[in-house]
Length: 136
Ligand SMILES: [Fe+2]
Image 1 (cartoon, rainbow, N blue to C red):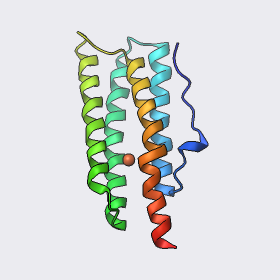
Image 2 (cartoon, rainbow, N blue to C red):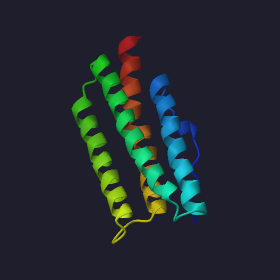
Image 3 (cartoon, protein in one colour):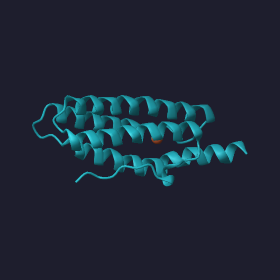
């Protein structure tokens, strides 16, 4: 049984660009979830996994550039968190593609959604809070 992936107000960090990219990011996870449920053997599932990985890479660079621009004091540790999830996701996709001990695509969906929910509501919110506190 697939989880229901929906945008929730609690994911809103209060920074226009970050929230915009987060909505796209979550939309990609949701699209993958629907495809993996409907058509798990489709080569499209692999392509969507790669799309999410590339989008995550892009989005993390965007966020890091925003942090750089505002002199965010926790940039290095935030960058480390981004790097770790990209590696984990890359490994899972690799395992998925090469079958063997692979997680199913739905497991990757759950993994990414849980990470997204936790990361946006904690680490990413702190960036927006820092910007609000230093620019008003
Ligand atoms: Fe982040």
